[in-house]
Image (cartoon, rainbow, N blue to C red; front, side, top):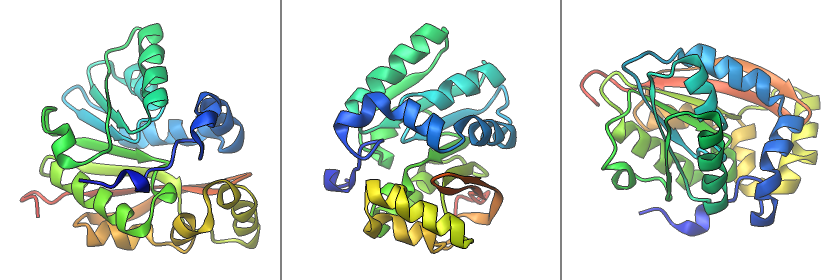
Length: 223
């Protein structure tokens, strides 16, 4: 089971969770990257989407707007974020199931195996060994040929993006967990976790650094 000490609240501190949506919207060009993510995922009627680190449920609403037939399941270790997500789903009148748990394969054993998984703005907040654990466990629960999409701070390629990243995200979340992302560790980690065809689909510059959308697929034999 994962260690709760590896968990960082969505906005870095529990007392900031109610302001998380506003902060993400203002600092990450959220509408742009979330819409790009939905376009890339292109959820189908038969898809089952598992959203790890679902936060306040923003992706659930967008998935339902794109394709209401796609089944959505979200898991997050922050109780306040999950409460907000459930309220947001009820207000939007959408079908979405949320669990307040640390993610592990056995934590979602009662849910159907997903054909899609998403991991948004999570990996930059956790230690290197936890990054790899999460990726391995996502790989384990995906259906054969299932696909993982990551939207997160990844390699900061320009001087400006590195400077902005240091001045914002690393000030909030610390350097130890965030620096591997900035150095480009995510693609190698995805491959180490067993994903195939790992690639960066797009990268978006923001005032807090560049956010990449990455993808990888689980093999047909699950290996």
